[in-house]
Image 1 (cartoon, rainbow, N blue to C red):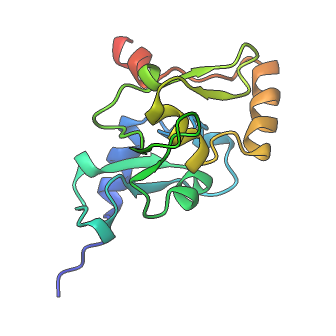
Image 2: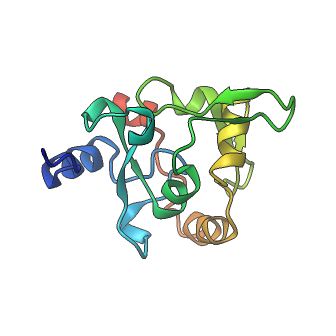
Length: 149
């Protein structure tokens, strides 16, 4: 039986591509108390593969809340919609920061469903954002910003 775990080389590539930020809540790995995961965007339970196109860097909170979810209800409409897909979607097309950069606001059905399902504004993450913002370390660039650097 083949070993179908994510390899350490894949983990490194995923982290480098994400600039060591969670691709969902934008938390920075250097301030985390737990190692980030190479998360399956399409879960293995839904036939997701261990390919770089199906892996995203995720903090433990986002990874745990996402688990095997691929859809969730949009809190505004109640409609079931797909979750944000870091390889296919632009972060800035679905999310914005609140004025004080402490909260992620979903601006599309996909964004709102992802904020709610993954609990992107968990108390501990919001508290950390406040502290990092005060010292000029938050918010990190979005993937779109990083691509332009």
